[in-house]
Image (cartoon, rainbow, N blue to C red):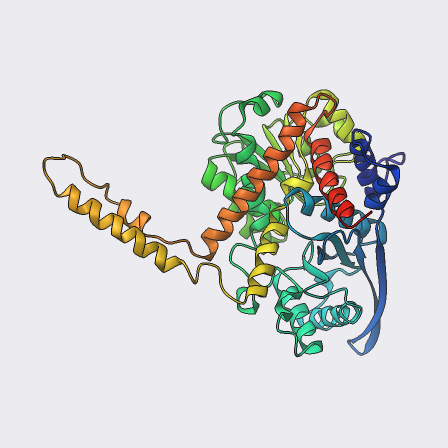
Length: 476
């Protein structure tokens, strides 16, 4: 829990922004223009449910329109408030700038516990919320494009897209009004797991740089590294699954609402996910030891800590217990500004949220482009790539028949080489490239400027400079 003297989430974002601006050559006026939230719309609407009218409160915040459309998820949670939505919108601005997706930052939220409603009731609520936003162009393929967030997913995005299409029957680009949709409603392969996949790619890129590993007191590769994950929702689950199954890392602890579960030999992430879906929590999971005090496991000795749930889980109240030398922020704002300062002075390396969880908005960008171009990625070129590959394979097979050369093709080379890139392969390639290039831009500032103490400050500097360049081009 936050201590009484600790800033709010929104104030934390501003503190980190101001820390970066102090190291930049920006006029005070331009810096303030970038920092402030442009507008926040608050809507209160009624829906008749179970024989009576219930009133709901929702928000849609637009932080920066240096590029349009603006982009950002819609979350469903009882804790949603204007300050939180504006802070998340600001992070979206900087995140999009850092990874070079051509959007401004936005965010939305609805004060609701989705678990309290039946599916048809949630559809009514979602459609009415979408109606209230869309009629003010706060959902629009060219102006404001939402996506899933905590408490929402493909289902809600499909309802929103359909509601917008009903209100704009002649808009040929209606499907591009929202991303994170299911495939049969205009979605894109790889979007569901995109944020978790982005966390994996971010860690892979970090581990490609020995100098950065030394700063964290680590060495080697991801294989065998001990990881603690806080939150096994969509992001935490996919990050944990990919890192353990594909990179050989050990997920030694998972922290959830009802406690934590530990297995030093590595947890079976799929089995744990299935258990949570069935039992509602991690208690009594047969593949590990249950700990009643889940948050205490944040201080467990490990190589990498992945906070992947809510903001401010690492704060002045518990920062002294944190022992991980490397933290990657899969959630938005999981470390408060005060805790960040203490960890930095201690030498802990933090891969910041605006970079680490940018996989979602990156693949959302690909989905938006797909919707505007009205064609599946790979449809035009895949078979042509395979035909060209086949010419090479046939020539190699002819040469390998020559006994004088004394060589032959490996058994699976032909099948692997003949595979043209489909939509999923192209999405993963684009995401991997995005995460690599963005990290290299951050670390260049981190290593070349002695006054830049950490990756978070470097990320803010890179992002703010790109936003400033956009405003300068507009004449500000």
